[in-house]
Amino acid sequence: MKYKIILASNSPRRRELLAGADIDFIVDTRNNFVEGPEAGVDPHQVPLDMSIGKSHGFHRPLAQDELLITADTVVICPVGGSESKKYASAFASVVLGKPRDADDAARMLRMLSGRSHEVVTGVTLRSSTREFSFSDMTRVHFKELSDADIAYYIERYKPFDKAGAYGIQEWIGYIGIRSVEGSYFNVMGLPVDRVRDAILDFEGRN
Image (cartoon, rainbow, N blue to C red; front, side):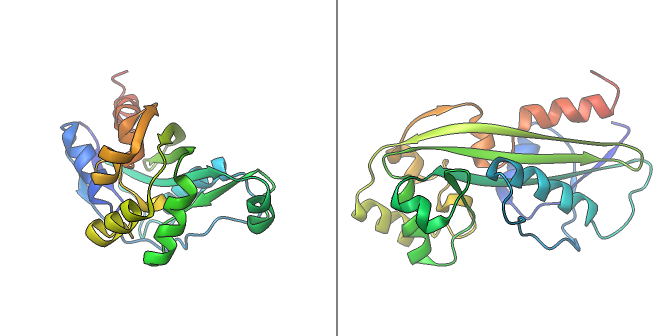
């Protein structure tokens, strides 16, 4: 490859996925971007905005032979009735980020229990002369989760670094997910097939 690829992410899952596609890269997470979506933004736009912000917040200019990859993943859960009023959502859905603590994780998992939700990842690839961003969406169907299952998962797996308080590749995915429509790897944090295609496009090989 003519580009040296930089992955600007602390996520071990994104590193695993990129490495699994036999893509050579280094990790550099130094960044000046302050994460936080603007009020009133469509939840589906949030991860794309965050990936672009992270890209432009990279701590230094890129060299001519460098290609920077940034990403952001959110879980979007539909809300209705009293929940709509609670979250004051103009879009009848709410973005679930990383839980603050065990109680917040349990709240999120109870919201997801017995429902379908969307996982959206925004990705930005940027060189010194070019920039390309896209988002990918996967629909995940959860069965009803018991309070005991939720408590066990949080205590055993401590999903505090995961959007929506769960990792599909962990125990909760084995026992709780009925079906997945779209990229499984996108739910893990990176639609790696599309990322590879975008890298090849930058390389002029598509």
